[in-house]
Image (cartoon, rainbow, N blue to C red; front, side, top):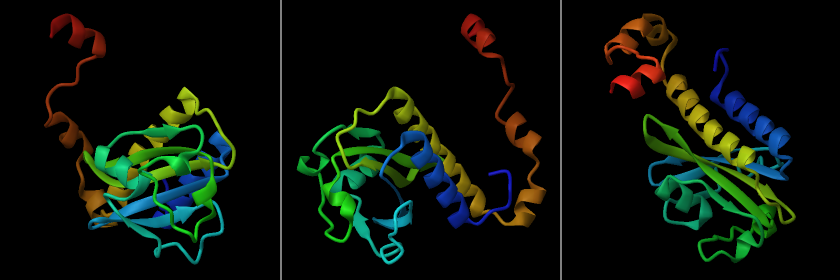
Length: 177
């Protein structure tokens, strides 16, 4: 987020980071387009499906994560979950383990990050925490990507922070208020 990168580059960087950290077989990023979630990034060879695989916010595990704004972890037989939606064109349909987090920008769900393993996999607390944090970071990157360079130059960052009121150290907040 500190370098000037295209949104595609940011998403691919996030996918690469997730794959490296979780050692997953698949990482897919879906972004909202109206009432749909659209596949926008992948570590696997889904070039033909990027932008074409779509699901409604009420479909599948991915739609559930977006609707509920919650992390979802299934360690085995994810395809047997009653919320699961079969696509047919994605090999991930037969993968065992599924971990998914919402992508959030300005307190709104704007997408979902899915991590999948071919074999059963018990997701660690670290994996869940990293995916949740990355979902928030992707949301920030999306918000920044929408700002023009001119708008970024004109923002008075200190004024934005100070307008919200004084910043107090956490210890003072607990002791005094």
